[in-house]
Length: 469
Image 1 (cartoon, rainbow, N blue to C red):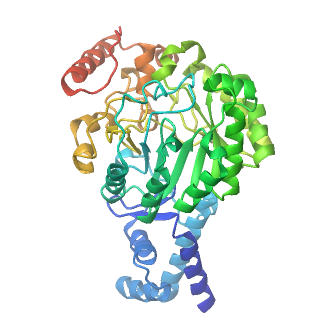
Image 2: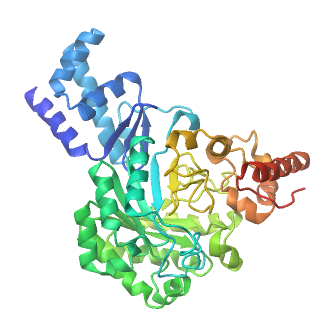
Image 3: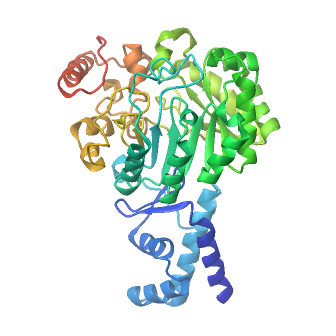
């Protein structure tokens, strides 16, 4: 029995940095973003083991007395619970004895799970589809100083109870005080991630400084295995070689690294080769991809965008090829499930995370609906997180009042929400979904448009202004 208890204690110590328990909604977050709901007993047990550092055998005796169960029963339940966590961490859900399926309810998660701060909109690249319009408006947006960023980080962790933070941009490595930001977040208990183009990470000494500060992971934008395609997309000759060198340095420093690719017409025919390249050169077990978001410089490069109706034909072969390679494709973009269902393809559930699963902050400290918007719902420097989170502007996004009328009542609506509101704002109509669903709710579309225009005018909430009929 002593060996079993020692195994429990060892497992808890080994997983302490990745397990985060949140009392307000009784969820277990396996950092960065695996979420499991906990019943009261499971939360009580894990809270005592992870947060209160209670010895396992002490917990067995206390819970045995509290619930009138034998010590063996409580001990076996504890082992089963920790075995389930271990299986979830390995993504072997069938091996998790205590995991059960419940109906999806977005309201069951009270606060965000992930957070990001765009610490600057400046960048060395001039990507065809940059949501931040970097580097053109980099100097137009006020940048918080280090002290202000620390205040925002403290609110994200202390008030919003979000355990993971990404530093993004623009290009965050252009901030010389980035290591100090990472160190502060790490010191208070957050897991830190960097979203970067990798160029400055070609400086090995700089990467070692990031690792020393506590950086745990990095996502590096790699738009193609070919230098000519990558450099054409980034608008920066020579960027491809520096990005590859940056990936190598990050990996060598012990920072968990993967690549992300934004799919566009310049690289769509080379994605399978890119996956093979990432596997062969870096040995990564997965790579991530996403669609262009219709904002920033992407609005000026309409010919590069690929719509919802075409994305499945591009992504499906990549999923199949990654399986052959023994890799996993991580998919970030929300899509209408009636057009492309990521769950059916084993990609998991993706939907718009505006002021819900993701807390996004711009360089000035404003809480944004998501990083692709240029206007926020208020400043975390001057307001509390809870006041912004519960505001009508925030609820507009979290309650998905922007959902296309044709999606109302659809079986996929709770998960999908009609996909990205910026996509439909740019499209000017919901035709793609209406064709698939063979419905065109003309009157509801008109009401939606009027309400949306009034909201933009009176509440300052971004929204579609195009005519719909």
